[in-house]
Image (cartoon, rainbow, N blue to C red; front, side):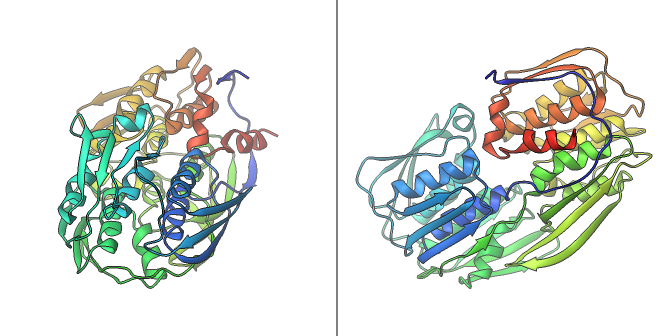
Amino acid sequence: MPNFLIVKKKINKFNKKIIVNGDKSLSIRWVLLSSLASGVSRAKNLLLSEDVLAAIKVIKKLGVKVILRKNYCKIFGNGVDGYNYKKNLSLNAENSGTLGRLILGLLINTPYTIKLIGDKSLSQRDFKRVAKPLGKFGAKFNLNKGFGLPLKISGSKNLKPIQYTENKGSAQCKSSVIFGGMRSNGETVIKAKKSRNHTELMCKYLNLPIKIENKKNYDLIKINKVNNIKKINYRIPSDISSAAFFIVLTILTNDSSITIKNVNINPSRIGIIIILKKMGVKFIFKNKRKYKGEIIADINVKNPKKLKSINCPKDLISKAIDEFLVIFLVAAKAKGISYFKNLSELNKKESPRLDWAVKILKFMGIKIIRTKDSIKIFGNPKLKINKKITIKNFLKDHRVFMTSVVAAHSFGGYWTIHDKDSIKTSFPSFLKILNKLKK
């Protein structure tokens, strides 16, 4: 089958209820922590994306038994020191920055040198940002070109706790150091810029020795050595980053409505909801409840009659970092000029996403002004596309693909969008759900 998608016309109005795949961040963290647990951990609704499957392959190479059937998974943990592997081990994080960075925190006590590799996209991403603080524990790193993959890590038996300031708003960096602190003797202290807090919540749920003080502009996290992790039985909530594509498609499609069930609405992840509310979108949360530290709800949203431009507050950047590409599509149809700044982290994702946002918006005929880390979008509420657009060579970034598909169905035109298989990274059922909305 061809690895591209052709979209010839806009989607018709719809009123549907859907369920999207399990949360990728929680799925990967569950896999990694379960690999260190004592006993058999079970998960339902585990995201069977390439990133999560890569995490399962990694722990299996570290000597952990896994049974995987459809959306049900069992991991037979051997305890916090239960990894069992031979010399000259090579681990492949494939396209997953979360896996690549977090697993290093768990390997800082490795008795043998381990090689970590990834695909072309991941190999261009910055691993120095985690190697530097993890090196302070006592581990040693050898990075390709001084910053990337492939890299080699050599652990230490005498790991010392550290004090670390995370000022990028990167949950991956913060989580990697939390995992490193779990391996070291004594108390590791992390002063972290606000970012996703799934790792902290999961650690608290497991009663691990972690303390969190939520300050106004940062979180103070203290973690001590972990000697035991109880088994983790978990029904993975749906991913708001996946839900975002259908939320935006609904907003941009006249007379449409959607309800997305069992979505994780963790406050550190709902930047897109807050931003879109400021732009005139109304949301209703139904069946809101707390589940193992996370907050889950059914999200209902309708197509609004008018969309307002926004000067996006900088404190929402980290809370919506994976959703900005589709947020920009809403800004393209809003009345007025929308301004987004402090977006440098976007170009450090699977592809240079800010660069790709500019390309897509220009293809659509939207006026923009771009600086190194900001973008002004001159919205056009009457935007209709009547030309051919081709999207390709975007390093197989799943979010670039899905954003392009949403744009094509929302604004019209004749789109040829390459690398359809990229959705396997995070949202394998994306096109299947989209087709249900067309019926």
